[in-house]
Length: 192
Image (tube, rainbow, N blue to C red):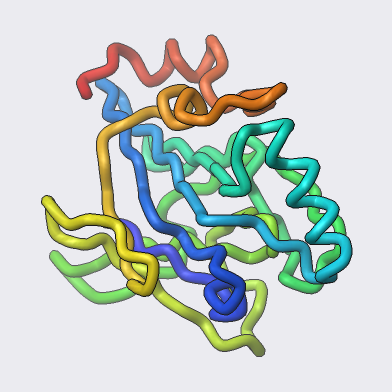
């Protein structure tokens, strides 16, 4: 069980997470997060950024992924490190973090890992790097739910990063290196 949390400011700009896609494998799972948009903090820079993103990727939306395997969460270029919302040009870091190092919400059977969105470009981590900002927590909606623009909660669907990227057609569909040959081998056969 995962809760995605981040600065409420992201929701004010209509950038919220709307769908989580999950691809299950023999030895873990690939989680792909689809955000409505990715707004730079400066409005002028954001306008230029949006006009570049649309033809390049065929979308304004932002797609980020993590992989869970062997009691770790792998961030394939989606780790924030100690960067925060105020970092002007966040660096996409690669790392693995043991699941027991993540902040959690709830206890016992209701215990959920919190995946913190720490930067404006949706880089994530195991702790909140923005303690002075108002935070919104997004929980997974029940099966059969549909995406709603004004819901703070999120729908979960079946799908891999490659399948989500394939929905958008631009000059560059993705420059994501999520599913490397090594990760594919470690995850094993896809179950769904």
